[in-house]
Amino acid sequence: MSVGNVEVFENVECKAETDMAILVDLYGDEKWIPKSVIADESEVIEKGDIGELVVSRWFAEKELA
Image (cartoon, rainbow, N blue to C red):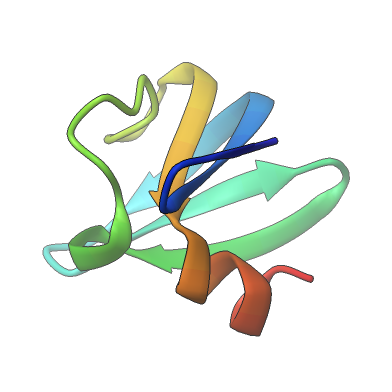
C-alpha cells in the first residue's frame, strides 16, 4: 500500500538482523532490507518483530517489486 513517499507491507516477519539490515519474510520471499530505508513508523525493525513494514517508496519500487 502506498502512503505518501512510503510503501506499507502487512504481516511481515523479521527473521534475522545485522547492524545494517534486517532479513524479512515478505509474502513467502526472504528479502534483506537496509535499515536506512525503514521508516520511523514501521512496526518491523528488529529480529522477532511481526507487523507492518514501512519502507521508502523508491526502495520498494526498485527492490521489492
